[in-house]
Length: 86
Image (cartoon, rainbow, N blue to C red; front, side):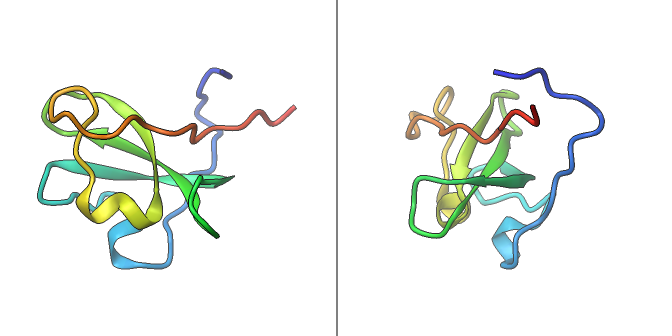
Protein backbone atom coordinates (compact mmCIF):
# COMPACT_ATOMS: atom_id res chain seq x y z
CA UNK A 1 0.00 0.00 0.00
CA UNK A 2 1.45 3.40 -0.93
CA UNK A 3 2.01 5.95 1.77
CA UNK A 4 -0.62 8.64 1.82
CA UNK A 5 0.79 12.04 0.97
CA UNK A 6 -0.31 15.64 1.08
CA UNK A 7 -0.59 15.81 -2.73
CA UNK A 8 -3.40 13.27 -2.95
CA UNK A 9 -6.45 14.69 -4.69
CA UNK A 10 -9.55 13.80 -2.64
CA UNK A 11 -12.90 14.47 -4.31
CA UNK A 12 -16.50 14.48 -3.13
CA UNK A 13 -19.08 12.36 -4.92
CA UNK A 14 -22.25 13.60 -6.54
CA UNK A 15 -24.75 12.66 -3.81
CA UNK A 16 -25.27 14.24 -0.41
CA UNK A 17 -23.94 11.22 1.52
CA UNK A 18 -20.61 11.14 -0.37
CA UNK A 19 -19.60 14.76 0.19
CA UNK A 20 -16.33 15.25 2.05
CA UNK A 21 -17.14 15.73 5.76
CA UNK A 22 -20.60 14.09 5.52
CA UNK A 23 -21.04 12.05 8.72
CA UNK A 24 -23.74 9.41 8.94
CA UNK A 25 -25.83 8.62 12.03
CA UNK A 26 -23.29 5.94 13.06
CA UNK A 27 -20.45 8.47 13.21
CA UNK A 28 -18.76 7.42 9.95
CA UNK A 29 -17.28 10.41 8.12
CA UNK A 30 -16.68 10.55 4.36
CA UNK A 31 -13.18 11.76 3.45
CA UNK A 32 -13.62 11.58 -0.33
CA UNK A 33 -12.38 9.38 -3.18
CA UNK A 34 -9.48 9.38 -5.64
CA UNK A 35 -11.23 7.80 -8.61
CA UNK A 36 -10.52 4.24 -7.50
CA UNK A 37 -13.26 1.81 -8.49
CA UNK A 38 -15.28 0.33 -5.66
CA UNK A 39 -16.62 -3.20 -5.49
CA UNK A 40 -20.22 -2.24 -6.30
CA UNK A 41 -21.41 -1.46 -9.86
CA UNK A 42 -20.22 1.97 -11.07
CA UNK A 43 -19.10 3.02 -7.59
CA UNK A 44 -15.98 4.74 -6.31
CA UNK A 45 -14.18 3.54 -3.20
CA UNK A 46 -14.37 6.26 -0.53
CA UNK A 47 -12.04 6.81 2.37
CA UNK A 48 -14.09 6.66 5.58
CA UNK A 49 -13.09 7.61 9.12
CA UNK A 50 -14.86 6.45 12.26
CA UNK A 51 -15.38 9.46 14.53
CA UNK A 52 -15.73 7.17 17.54
CA UNK A 53 -12.48 5.16 17.40
CA UNK A 54 -10.52 6.80 14.56
CA UNK A 55 -10.31 3.70 12.34
CA UNK A 56 -9.89 4.54 8.63
CA UNK A 57 -11.16 2.20 5.92
CA UNK A 58 -12.75 2.13 2.46
CA UNK A 59 -16.40 1.89 1.46
CA UNK A 60 -18.49 1.98 -1.69
CA UNK A 61 -20.41 5.22 -2.10
CA UNK A 62 -23.70 3.31 -2.06
CA UNK A 63 -22.95 2.14 1.50
CA UNK A 64 -21.85 5.44 3.05
CA UNK A 65 -25.25 6.45 4.44
CA UNK A 66 -25.53 3.31 6.62
CA UNK A 67 -21.92 2.22 7.25
CA UNK A 68 -20.81 1.07 10.67
CA UNK A 69 -17.18 0.80 11.75
CA UNK A 70 -15.51 -2.59 11.19
CA UNK A 71 -13.58 -2.17 14.46
CA UNK A 72 -15.89 -0.68 17.09
CA UNK A 73 -19.35 -1.34 15.62
CA UNK A 74 -18.95 -4.82 14.07
CA UNK A 75 -19.44 -3.42 10.54
CA UNK A 76 -18.37 -5.07 7.29
CA UNK A 77 -14.68 -5.08 6.42
CA UNK A 78 -13.43 -2.13 4.41
CA UNK A 79 -12.33 -2.13 0.76
CA UNK A 80 -9.17 -0.63 -0.79
CA UNK A 81 -9.63 3.09 -1.50
CA UNK A 82 -6.11 3.94 -2.68
CA UNK A 83 -4.11 3.46 -5.82
CA UNK A 84 -0.51 3.98 -6.72
CA UNK A 85 0.29 6.92 -8.98
CA UNK A 86 3.32 5.09 -10.37
